[in-house]
Image (cartoon, rainbow over all chains, first blue to last red; front, top):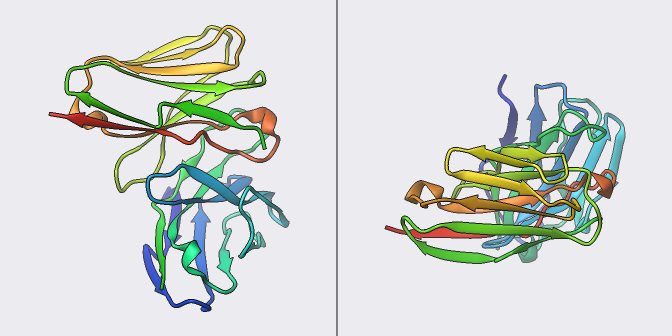
Length: 114
Length: 111
């Protein structure tokens, strides 16, 4: 199993540009989520999904959209990038939110918005 | 979502000293998990505690879950430079679907 994969690893955007961060998992996990981590800070939940076709907002959803058309993929879209969105983005998956399972994190995408 | 608070936020220790980080919740937790994130890396699962008063050990790491299941701690004995990183607790299951983490404790070890 590849686990949780994220692309790209690094990205530089200009203010106002849009882009999609890709996340995929091959463990047949129901639950997937996106976190952002600012320098020296903790993990803040952006959006999450408890299964294909279902998404919901986390703690800091503004400026981001998600979709979950398949169990495997959970892309994160930045609609109009702003410097405040400069951060490291982690995708994570978990077998299910209904039981005590560990979360698996992807390697992260380092995004800089100029 | 349900919040867990971690203290301290940062800790500098001399190699060989002990280190403890605490995770506190205002409500009873069904379980607690601990993760470690090395500098430049991603969080990696360490352990899960479920039972009241549970204590688990992993080599020099000792994890405890409070009797009231409202707090947890991670203690590292005789720190080494390989222990450097940020330790996160969470997420509390009774937050529903929003799996949030504590703010983390960043451990720095001076050789």
